[in-house]
Length: 553
Image 1 (cartoon, rainbow, N blue to C red):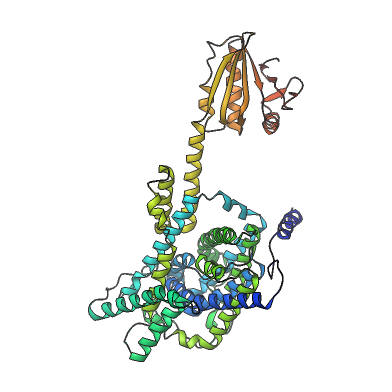
Image 2: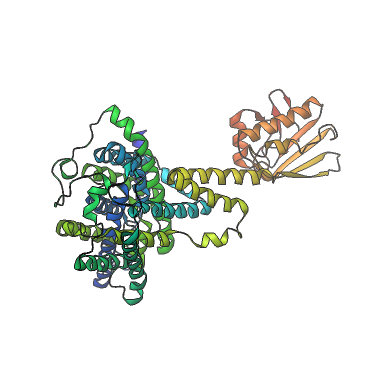
């Protein structure tokens, strides 16, 4: 079985786009575009990786390690060129509870287990199920993610050192007031204004980097007394601020991984499953989005494996893990990045930033990071969904709102699953109401029921109500040319109707069943062939129930 799974997976890889250069071949101009695109992405990754690490309650370098390792590995073996992966807010908001309650060493074990789960999902070809996510669910997940990121920033408007650890992150505390609040809001607004104006002036420098850089220079030059990244110790409960790119030992800055015991597994497994699901869902949604923009194909299962390998490696190197980043992937695509060179270049440039600039990161004012995150929220939220709520079907509008709310109060994975289930039930209900039949009499005196609509568990009861057993003639023909038998409930409904006609001493015929329905009937064993196949449809039209005759042609 393992060999079969491996063969199936490797066969899937053969059709995946693994290009290092576009189909028009190598050129210096193309290489320049890819490298500059990678540099742009790397510059934009720095503030977001630090900010997401801040949301998770871990050291900024934990987010930067994740951005480098996850970005590099997924760029090398990911399912679609052009995608960018790294530390994300969707994962960070789940990690904060684990870090606050058990410590960062348990986070690293969780990330390793998360990666192994994702590898398993890829080998099992589960990535293809992302096709089942309806568009209303995607809108809801985007909106919910934006709201979650926004709410995570609210703790930065509280007085450092006054918050308490609730086991689900830092909470409580006194709100800023007076001049500190005014100064915080002013710097946040200044950062957002710079990010908004910069693209209209020049696109040589990524707007998020420009916003942080300008505000940081002003704060440092004027000596403003405002919270900075280096002050995370007082806000998050205290941890060292090392000036080193990588720590000693298996964990970050010498912190060992949590022991691999059953007790550890019991603690980290729920988080690992949730993080794996969130990471795969966001990555596969990004995979489809980039594919639509670049008109390229990619491998969903390969992307699952790539994300899993990246997170497994990242966990051992003291990173917070990650997944595909919708915003950064859009930056890369719009900057011209189309191949794996851009993603690899982004990771390498980010590593250089870590090696030579980690001490500068501590000087970044927190207000600038909040400003960046607010702009990410504005750019992430699907504002058009507010205008289409009154135009789309009521059930679709309900799903958008439902997924948004569940994302905020639970997590992304649960929200998407709930949205898919509700959408599926709504689809089943609509199809169940479509079952009906046209009737007419033949010259021989038989009554024909032309069944229309799918026959499945949802419509089985409605199918049974179509027939007038007592009022029908001695011969009844059920024509399935415009219908389809789908499942076991449909088979049972057919047998129940046939039994009623048999008890009434009447004969029934089944006509025009499709080839797969014919096989389903035979496999179930409820009905068996009693004559030759239909010459047009090549399926049996006359059946016998094991307990009596269903009909003759």
